[in-house]
Length: 110
Image (cartoon, rainbow, N blue to C red; front, side, top):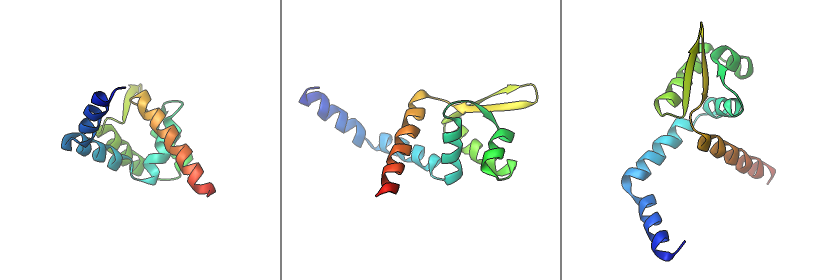
């Protein structure tokens, strides 16, 4: 990557709209239950009932957190008979969650 490309990339990162998009994305993740949900959804899709087995909170609470992430297009869902299955919408988000887990593990070991 040459200097012109680096400068152009830095300008894009500092663009107010891009910063706002990044902040909204991070706000949508900024809750322990939401992060746990993303960790659970990394490898497979799950229904609210399946998530509840791991999270030990009400289905209403889980549904509220899913709605926030669905609104931010972090997760998506599909209906199959009486169940709605949730999954991470973009493989880049799966990579992001994996990196975040690595950072958290490293920080907890310090």
